[in-house]
Image 1 (cartoon, each protein chain N blue to C red):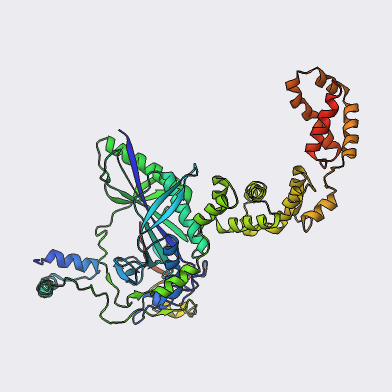
Image 2 (cartoon, one colour; image 1 turned 45 degrees about the horizontal axis):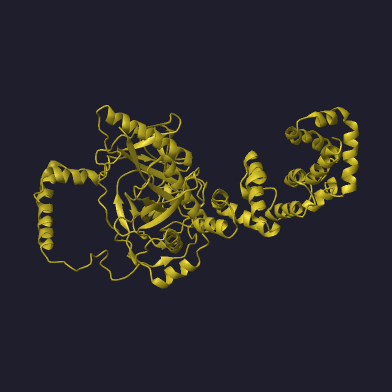
Length: 95
Length: 484
């Protein structure tokens, strides 16, 4: 796949990253190299190999269904830019 | 042209765990905003999710209840999108390896026929927070208490062909999750939410039409109304030469219509990938078997047993098995009075009627199953007649007495079955009604049956409702016919 600036801009937008034109063209080069490596990987014969969901060869531990957290709202809200009536305030979202 | 409707449902069920799916914060409804949103729920740096065993167990129980395959391994993925009520920037969900595989649900239609709807899969995921759009100086308020609440998303195959079938399916799911006790099923509080995929196609065509997805349809009634509107809209659109576009629409119950939601520019680019913070979930067979053994009797099995073992009609069996509380109440009443048919009639008739009138749930009923069962026993053993029974029911309902026997005694409702006493009352009524007696004698024989009603009424009144109506009828007929 040939990567173009529009792809980079779209990926940046989806990740909500502001990038300059300069950065965009640099990322085209960087990301193209990564994609080349992916192409190389894709040439490996993986028939009969199960996809890997996680690099660790372990399984998920489960926790008992118990409430262990206490209300720390005041502490958490100290680093929020705006709060009111216990709510976090964000720029208006219109549906 | 004849059109066929094709419907598939995605039902989100909030699981009734005490704590969240990946954190130890409480899931209790109605708490102060953000007082139950911990560092994990807020997506603060450095936190790690740990999966709630109970959420896993509940999902598996659902899978077993719908005869689904339970895969050995399931995997959590990240569904990436930006929205302020999703603080991590992704929802942890299961895209490729869900915890519950293909299954099947039985639904009951209005005419009591049973149909099967296939389940495509069900997966575990976390709920998002809530956005409050009221005016906070032009800002939006965010409450993250709900963020991280475990959800089971149940995805059906597009097997339903009418709004009624869709509503029946939703009721069947509701019934299963409440029987299992894995959710309170409270649609008003959002414990069960539903997205509906609707398309139409000409009858006989195999390929599906383009579908619209209707979001957040949150009651059984709205499901029917939203589908009815959407089907009309799509047919009209196509017949006018237009084309249905694949989009998300919102149902507005006030206007009874669906509206296109502003389509986001980058819609449906969620860039799913396996969540590196969570390892694959592996379920061993012993664990699944253990959950299978602990399953309660499910609505479909109960319905079946009510018909075959108790001899109830399909309709009765269906109504009485619809909710677990209803079924348990009925079974207790039946156990006390020993007569399934009478128990079924009373529970669906007098009892349900009284609950509906006062808008009460079974749990809130002022009369318990034992009291009702004992009351029915007194009808069965002829201590009281049907009319008196209703009076006793009302008295028990209003807490005028501990049990049926006490009320019967206090109100003197014991049925009079003493032939001599009934005869005396009949003689009195006949003596007091010469005109009616003359009419009776002059009437055509086939009309007399109806005319006897007047005399029965008078005798019942004289006995203050306590005479045995069958005896009254029989004796009256003998006495009046003797005058012919």
